[in-house]
Length: 100
Image 1 (cartoon, rainbow, N blue to C red):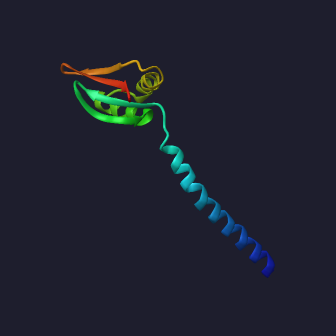
Image 2 (cartoon, rainbow, N blue to C red):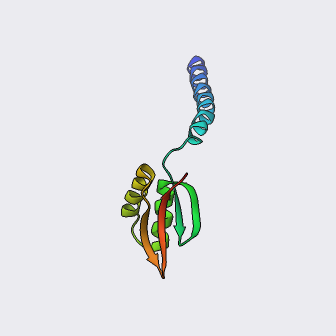
Image 3 (cartoon, rainbow, N blue to C red):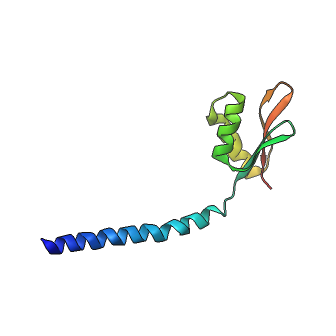
């Protein structure tokens, strides 16, 4: 019975060490992201170099619309560089542009 506990402890320690080693490697990959976009209202940038999901959520919240269609626009903006207007507040357009 004692040897089963030792094996279990060794497997647990190996899993913990493996997770500790994998963590920094995953963090390094996040620094090389593509597909970043900017969100602006008129000529004021409210979000720069954001992931498309975050940008879509922010633009949808500002405009008061569902995030699904805005996410599609954000992905298209990131992929093609096409600027998209999500909505207009007063006379100011809420736009998505590709991050440079």
